[in-house]
Image (cartoon, rainbow, N blue to C red; front, top):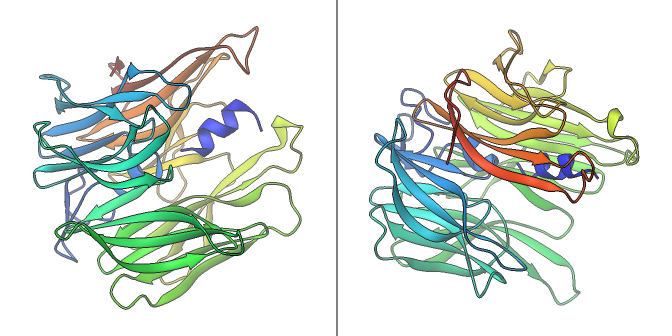
Length: 364
């Protein structure tokens, strides 16, 4: 798989307030740590009120295994930048609830990851969960939902979706466990959590009741014998699930890839393809979909798949990835490569902020 594919692969639930971070869900009267879309795209930014919390481009410390990054707090227009922590992972999955920031951090000289909590002023940093796999998590009210990876007595890899109480600092329940699939994206809404469970020949979107643990299948995709065909992105937004089907028929041909976006209701009805065009790394914000196209450019469309347009066009030797939205701003990564050594010659890999129209691009 090409470097472009790998980086792009690594890459709301509210009805009245869409701030993509510290948001209140009117239906469930809950507070969420970040938008489902941002978490699906690495959680590089989150919002609380007029402030955004963003992972830096600048590396605090390089190690052989993992780099340490800063998390900054900035006013919504980018002013008054303050350093909060200096051990954030490359994909930190930032959540902000109340006076606390939650994020995936690096420790043990870059050999391990953990889920950390720190006050919004940068004090009181605590590691809540150690030896964490490099996976997403999301906070709702007093609970943190995360993915635990273990190996059982038969040496099978086990992926579990767990619920962690932030008051007792203990895992209180396991909502789903699998040995035949890995857990991809997760989205929260009210009493339910939606996950994508990816297997060799089938990908499933599940709807799980967080209290009763009851599980229903929203959609099942059967890839058959196709090479690298699965559900890629999965985001819940305003009563619907938006997901993409990635298909690479020939691993040795970069030009045959497809990635099409679909919409299905949260009850599993009215499944519909929105666009036949390459659509990856989707972020739903203010009733629009922002995404990466086949050239690595940042684009947008309406939620029905119409009015597609390019916001930031990638050049031959660069591409964008991991779109996040906070406080009516867009945050994303940009990779610039050496045209003479495209696989090893990465010249820069930084996080930027722009307006939603792509103006005023600033490196974080």
